[in-house]
Amino acid sequence: MDDLSGPPRSEPTDDPGLAGRIAVWDAEAAAYDDPADHGLRDPAVRAAWSALLLPLLPSAPARVAELGCGTATLSALIAAAGHRVDAVDFSPAMLERARAKVAGLPGSPVRVLAGDAAHPPLTADSYDVVLCRHVLWALPDPVAVLRRWTALLRPGGVLVLVEGSWSTGAGITGAECVALAEAADLEPAHTPLVDPALWGREISDDRYLVVARPRRSVAKQRESGESR
Image (cartoon, rainbow, N blue to C red; front, side):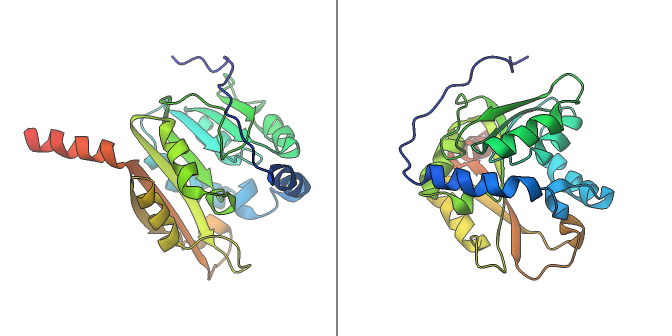
């Protein structure tokens, strides 16, 4: 079993806008769980996210990194299914709520860490899944970020992105996300997320899931299949 208690490997960052972004998300923390898809307080919405995400994970206990975890709602959901999660966020206010949310989980399966999702304070080649929801769109140099995230994966690991191009004008389109993944040497699969159960309401904007595997890993799997 992997040790979840050891110190993480920190990564340097010289991002001049980091302090401002932290302040923005600190200000969002108090109301962050109010939208149905953030807090997952509605059992139907929670069930919809479970049905979406849990089949993408290996058999428990897999090791998962959630980057830009916010209040760690998805980390708690995944941990409740028997997985071990390292949840990373740079906002102290979000981290405070995240730690409170996962504190009562049996066996302490979630480790909440302070860090920039663009430069995760995590060890390479250590995770079966890297999960990011509504994070990539907000980061500078997303191709470099995707490569850093990919480096965290064990052989056979998978990157799971939930993103969108929202009616507010923020975000990235599904086509843009796929192109970024391909530029980062990933093989992405795109799925629209149009089910109102995921959001607690009808939606009209572009929300989607991208599941991406390192191109080298996919090539090895294909070679293995052809050799049988």
